Length: 116
Image 1 (cartoon, rainbow, N blue to C red):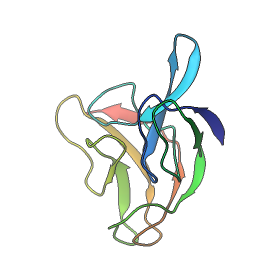
Image 2 (cartoon, rainbow, N blue to C red):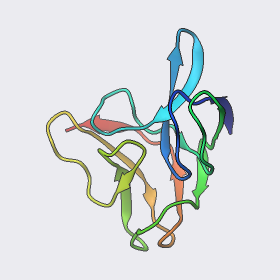
Image 3 (spheres, rainbow, N blue to C red):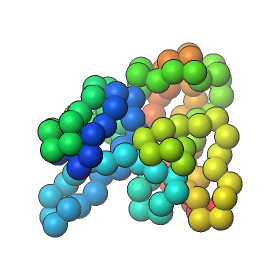
Image 4 (cartoon, rainbow, N blue to C red):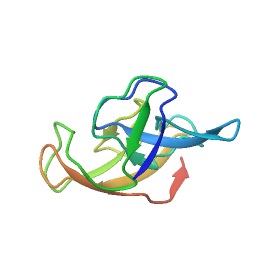
């Protein structure tokens, strides 16, 4: 895990991007619409903007809903989210996050991404 300030409010289960804000490591929602905002981990609890977030760099994200067991999960174009269909618009980041273990849980391991 990594503990750092959240630069925006984070919801339990959100995939997050770790970034440098003037030399201070911070967490923000990962977003497939913006290169450089790939998922580096996830949070298991809600975090207010400015509060410290515990970012899990790998492991089971048990705060998700609506997944199909066995389906591949990708970083979504909705900030912090995941989708079972890889983004395909020009310029979108395509990042595989893991495979659903159940409707509410998946094992995350940071992986390389590429731009559509």
